[in-house]
Image 1 (cartoon, rainbow over the protein chains, first blue to last red):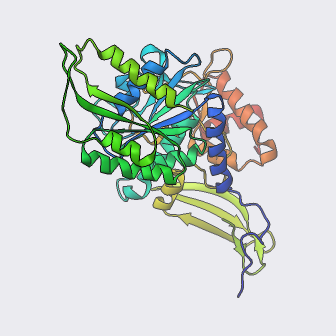
Image 2 (cartoon, rainbow over the protein chains, first blue to last red):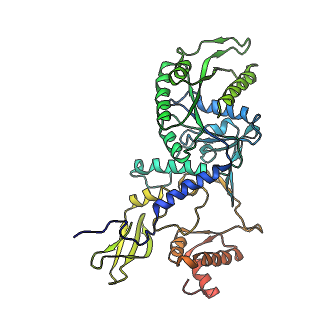
Image 3 (cartoon, chains in turn red, brown):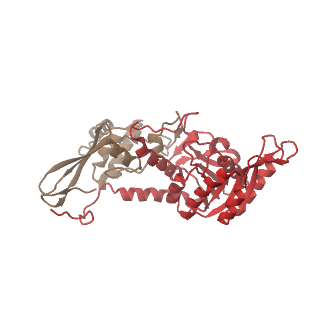
Length: 278
Length: 148
């Protein structure tokens, strides 16, 4: 017995799964049509203050960019950017889609933090068995919906706060092939350098332009006199910048909340990142 | 996926789909030449995997709702979303339940849009928030839409 091939049987494939997936990608493209640039904030390592840096840059950029700034918190399991930007739900849905929350200074935000119960882990309402098979797919689907179904409107920049690791970056580059670039965040330590370097190599392999490095917790700023004291050993920021031939955008010291230098320092961080944007 | 009647070497025609329970997806196909009927049963895991991609087995009959996956599958906080997708006069647009979408899928595509509009108008006029197969049955009977 010999069968004809799928393509030789010329009748319709009613499910048209390939076409449905293509339509999903098209919706992402259409939704981001009025967003001038999409920039990822990435780090291979957790705990480097990536979400803090994202929120600080967003707050600074929104004063300099007339069309607006958006933040998509792609860290679905440990979302914090929404809280850092004082964004609150519920999210409003109308015939245009899901409207983002309004954060501090007018930054528009979408984050899983707005949707989960306080303190509740990310969980899906599906069978408890074999979760590993479909969990990643659901999370990639959620990221796609955050991009495609949120009414981002006209923006000068949409910052994507990526979780540690590289999986979500891969999802993002497939969904947004026109990603304008990525800013890497590290702390000074050698452990961070090694971890962030892996993530940056992955980004480079995926063809994502690396815009620069921010070294966070680069010393401790005295709340009284502003003097910077050492906090972590190492110089991961400058080493990564040199290795990839990109600028070290800023060394951001740990700033106590009452520090008088805080606004000026965050302003300088924003200015350096703005200069690096394509 | 295409189904071929081996006897006739002819592509089988889709007849209907059902989700009979426990997550199983069932689709029935008929050979237009010899009349042979078969049912394809996808196990719950396969069904779940495909649905988690945000695609519909058997094709889409309705445009995707905003954040379909997140709103349908996430264990979210109460009131995470406020649905204001009302009609122009402020009335709420009813949603089609999964079962009614299955039934709508069996309506020939060239009249599906019109049938959907009739059911929607029927539900809006009566303040019905969700269109279920029962609502569709009542609408068919009251509006004289037998056969749709």
